Structures are given as C-alpha cells and as structure tokens.
Image (cartoon, rainbow over all chains, first blue to last red; front, side):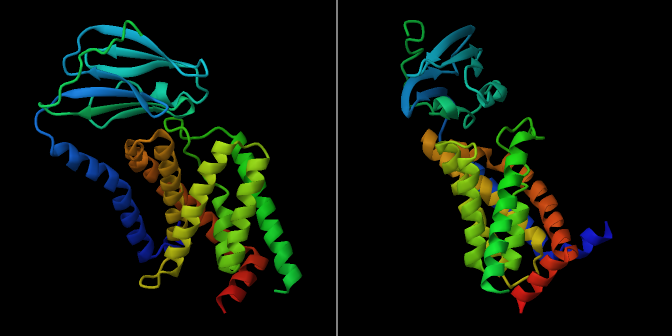
Length: 140
Length: 175
C-alpha cells in the first residue's frame, strides 16, 4: 500500500478532479438548458434511424400501453408506457442495454438501443409547445 | 536501442496488446450494469509504450493494435468506436504526460487515457444516434474509467519499475 502512495503524486489528484469536472459538463449544460424552459410538459420522442417516429405526451398519459417498433431489418423493440413512464420492455438486440435501462420519466433521460438505432428521449417542451396527443400508437 | 531492437520491441508490444484485448473480450465485463464498460487491460501496453518509446513509435503500437484486434474478431462499428476511443485516449495521455506544471505519475496519465477513451466512444455513439443526449452517460462511464485507470496505472508502474528491460528502456527514453 505504501508503494501506491509514494507513486501517486499531487498532479494525479488534480488530474482526477479535472477529469471528473469534464465528465459532468454535458450534464451541467443539459440541466442549464432545461432550466431555461418554463413550465413542465414532458414528451417522449422516439426516433428510429434518425427519424422521429413517435411523440408521446407523457405528462398527460395515464394507464398502461404496449406497442412494438419494428426496424427495417425486422428487429423488434417493445415499448411499454405506464402512467407517464416509458421503458423498452423487450428487444431483439444482442446487448440488451436498452432493456436494462428500465423506466425513465424525467426530462433529459434517454433510452438508447444502438444496434437498432432507436433512441427514446424525454424532452421538456414547456407550456407553449403543443404536441399531437397520443400520436397514432394504436394504428401503427 | 538499435533500429532492429526497436522494431522487434514495437512488434512485441503490439502483439501483447492484441492478445490482451482478445483475452479481455472473452472475460465477462465486471461492470454488468453498464455494458460497454471494460477494464481496458490493453491500456497497460499503451502506457508502457508511451514511457519507453518515442511518441511516433508509441502511436504505431496503438495503430497496429487497433487494426489487428479488429481483424481478429471485430466489426466495422467496433472499429469506429475503438479507433475514436484510442485516438482521443492516446492524445490525452500524451498531453497529460507533457504537462510539466505539476508532478504527474503514470497513474494520472492512465486515468486520463481511460476517461477520454469513453469520451471518444460516446462522441461516436452520439453521432450515430444523432443526439447529444448520449453524452449524459459520461459521468457513470468516467467514474468507472477513473477507477480502472487507477488500477491500470499502478500495474504499468509496477511493470516499468520491476521488469529490468522496461526499466532500462525508460531510462534510455528519459535521457
């Protein structure tokens, strides 16, 4: 243990602190941006291969819903909506990162399934922005 | 070091790095909650290369490692991820090493390398997913990176101190 302490120098601690600061900057910028928006109205934006496919109003969502999103390669992600929260319930991707993320319900949270290029992002749009409520989930 | 010695040494380091990254790929990640996070054992070799070879030659070691590791069981997307990570991590390690304001040991260099490897990968991920929100994973990744970087730094430090040849090359490099 003494060996470790003698090799650890003051500069290392500074580097460690600096690295921590750097890693929290994206979070800080994001929270600052969110603070600029008045009111709270959360929408979940689901995009597949860089195209927005669904915009779901989470603030006014109630109840329980399940629907599938199918990619061009016939891969399936099952999305679950439950009282203003959203999660990917199951997916056919190999790493299952998206499934393990679980439910998200706050602005700025994301679920990403990189193999399918599927991104679910919760945005706070404030009071003025109007979203078509419950975009045709059922018909799709 | 003669030219031949140097060439053999570069080849040896690159070969070891490739084998280490292959072995690492076959052991399950200890960070089950954050897939994609790994120990980064191959970074030991990059650290050793940085301290025993010139910048140009250390760069060659990293380049050979990336290309060979991809050919031996990677895909195009893992190549993009690992090359972006490796490039950023190599540059940051170099920058930290050249920083002469404060005394910095290998541990600091290795931590910077680990964290910037994550930065590079997340930048590519946010480019592929076309959303900057991917960068919000950075804090978790960085904390893991700092811990693994710390461990890797101690390991590389130990090797440089106690393997005679490496110790001698470090001495040659610093004179």
